[in-house]
Length: 510
Image 1 (tube, helix red, strand yellow):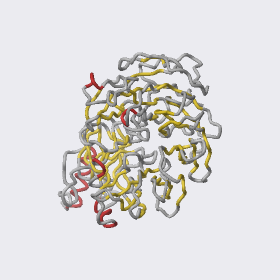
Image 2 (cartoon, one colour; image 1 turned 90 degrees about the vertical axis):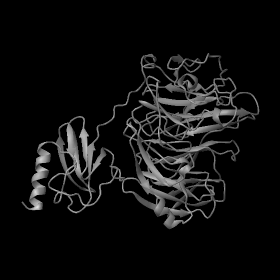
Image 3 (tube, rainbow, N blue to C red; image 1 turned 45 degrees about the horizontal axis):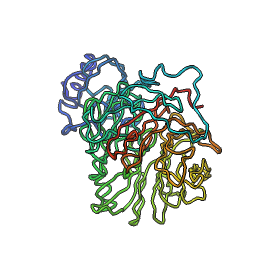
Image 4 (tube, rainbow, N blue to C red; image 1 turned 135 degrees about the vertical axis):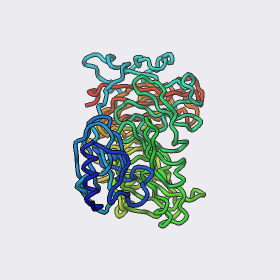
């Protein structure tokens, strides 16, 4: 029998049996060594890469599977069982291909069991701008829903670092990063020793300490697969992006930038966002800053996850950004800094630039109700210390509310990660000074992205400011049903800190 005929017969036999074990192809021998892991080019949304050509994989339920690459595929409906990754007819002879499984839409629970029956019919958030006294409230036990005394929202303590065996504290890392996964079943928690932990977002049980991410690893949840997250080596050293399955522990490199960056900048040593950036809302486009071994800046680049292509590069000429981030649409790389460049949004290829602010302040990039990328920040250089929004596409800036009120000032963070509820951001304020408490102080708020916005207060966070770790850094989930924040619950400690969540009905915001 000829080798070609033998190949055809074997492939048909494998398909008839649903799958075979590791086997031969093209004359009985795979051409060259098999990759040790699944190909690093990620599948587009709706598909998950499960094996490289010539590898076997297991389906736990009947699934739609395709074999090929690019725009050329053979698609089959397969039963549960072992599958050999080669389908006939070969969709692209002579080219290396992968098997991809069609993913199912992920059901997203609205509220956890603790808050599921909390809200009465007709519940409405408070939009009154008033400096309410902050009533005393005993620190809640973990997992127990309590009523936020002033604003009547469902408040749940999600961690107890002492009881959970988590080092030092168990806190949300930052406002500009998603704390909850794609279907609100897992919560990411950062510990004082630099370890990352995953909690069940509904039972509040600590599930595990992650193996891989450590310290400033910038973990980012996958936008659709609730088990996956991306992370960097600590501080981006090594210039790789990893993908981790938090359930199985399986990990792979999805972007290895080292050779390409060293060809562009020979002294390149680290590629990261400097802890405050995020990819586009669909996880496809990324923006990274590039540092040398002594943390001098050489450049910024954009990357397409789906094609593993560097789309553009920008020389910083030694002016190191404070941080960089991709916009939710993936159309802009926002480079934030306090140097002459200030904060600017660049097109993906860096051919166009829009100035956003003269310096770097606490900010985030959100979507407005029309789907435009909106830069939201505080401008302490303005007369009123405005929190403002700027449409990156049009360049139009709109003041949202002043922070200099009756001689006072306040620090704050912004979270624009509610991509499935465009037109809203979370603002958490802390460390106010200069006079009596004002309407915006010491709160977690939902702020509408429009002129003269509606501002709903969700909770008093009850943290007594004592250094960086005590900042509430409230972060919103994708559908604005959960807002996570940190608090030392008024005890004044700089490390005795846990995370708390306000859960909201999907109908709470218009």
